[in-house]
Image (tube, rainbow, N blue to C red):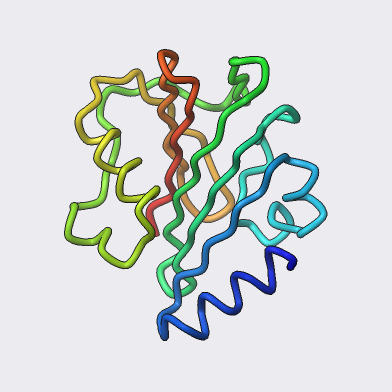
Length: 141
């Protein structure tokens, strides 16, 4: 079953405008046109794996969790380090799946460093957990 069909089924069953998808690799995400549709950032590393994303169609908020096979995260030059990320309130996360709520909680309790990258509609925030190899990213609507 394709990721797009799965996302549509989740939407139909949930009655809300939050869609989610999982991709084993960036190549799988690209085949599903997730980058062209704007749900995944263009800078997602070629070796990204275990990709999970969720987004709200109404607010354009999104959450992304992934790892890389190299353990490195090379971001575009226009991404800047920051110590003051904009993280949604916990109550606003109820509509999202568990992986996004966990990512939000990890980001909220972390001291960083955080990166802020310009996006198509809004800035995208990134937190790399070098200990676990997971990368957490979110786009506020």
